[in-house]
Length: 56
Image (cartoon, rainbow, N blue to C red; front, side, top):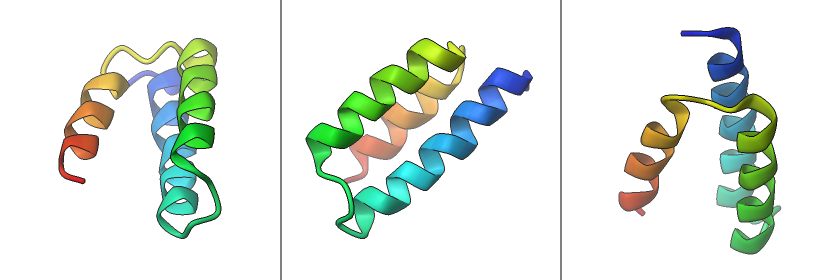
């Protein structure tokens, strides 16, 4: 994995925990995710996110 991919995954993992713990709303999480996708431009990260969100 490229460095940007790893950074995106690690960063979003932390924000997913915050969402799960009620520290973020779904709307706030969506804004953060959009900004992190723009910043890190993950190639595969969006696939992993889509799969994990379908489980909820």
